Image 1: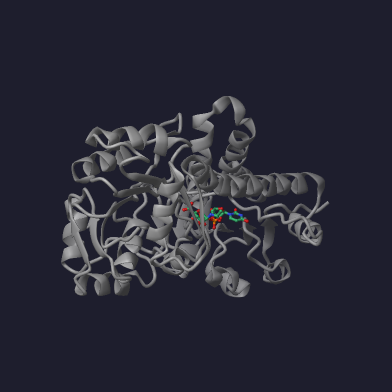
Image 2 (image 1 turned 90 degrees about the vertical axis):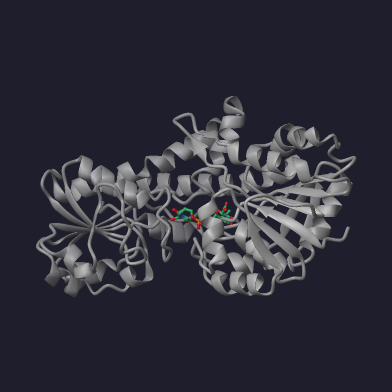
Length: 426
Ligand code: SAJ
């Protein structure tokens, strides 16, 4: 199948790079978003999200005339849906309203022979049970009159532009012909392998990838608790276990954050709660890891009431500015809940405005008069901190390392009592 004109619905972290990449590969693209302020920003040459290289890519695409933006899709050969599917409420149900709205917006423009691809992370069977019936309100039948497919994005924030092109991509069709049509579409720019399957398999693949990672981090976190219990250094034990050719234990830490791995497993649990006790348990282990870190701080400092603590890092993982679902933020909240006065420093987002969290503008101000310092994110610049300088900037000599970022000997030489996650002297 040939593609000259497409619409991409949802101009976020996935939709905008996808739309721009198609546009720079010879496809006329209309980027669609329901938020007028996003359209206005893009039309005036601005950008509402941060991703390395994206500014150049988007302005190139817009200036060439191949990328336009607007509030509604238009007639064309294909439609890609890349809208968010967050979870809502205590029952962690996937919020499919944006997918439903996008599918409904396509209906008036859907024509025989078109292709529709859903990219949004979704519970299994969404393409067949939710999207197809909406699109069929057009009077056309999915897999017969038009092609319908699911293709998950699997790019890593910070590397999106490269990974979009280089990663392997799975395309799942409601029929083999639909999978082939999606294959032809992504072939325009994807250099990695494109593998055809059915729609529900493709949905499962995405959820399985992130769930696999979540449960593996959960076991690493549980190992950190066991090591603490038995007087073992978990970091040493993991590096020794990983010498085994078929073992690769991930890293323990303060928990799992970000908008993918801490969210996606719930899509499976919510879709089939009776048969997913293990996946749910892993989620709960990771969600309770901030509590375990706060218990360590309490062990190091005694009662936290009135204690002044400098927290280093708020991002959900090293060397990014993304604070979504961050376990570091959760640790700060729990410390405050236990009565501590916390000042946090996030060098990648110094102006972050988080409710009830005081952020220091720089390291010195954050450390000033602190009784203890806690390392919550292994940012490169924190790992190379000079322990003597830190000692001279603060009041107390208590340090807690939740991410194995600091050299114990250096900190102890600088006079610190250092508590490390997953390490307890026997
Ligand atoms: N983490 C640990 N220990 C580890 C590895 C990670 O505690 O050994 C924590 C991180 O600190 C972070 C969280 O897990 O809080 C998730 O970080 P991540 O780097 O593992 O993943 P994300 O969420 O940035 O991106 C993932 C990627 N999926 C996989 O690696 C299977 C990416 O390919 C997906 O595109 C993305 O989720 C997504 O959009 O689903």
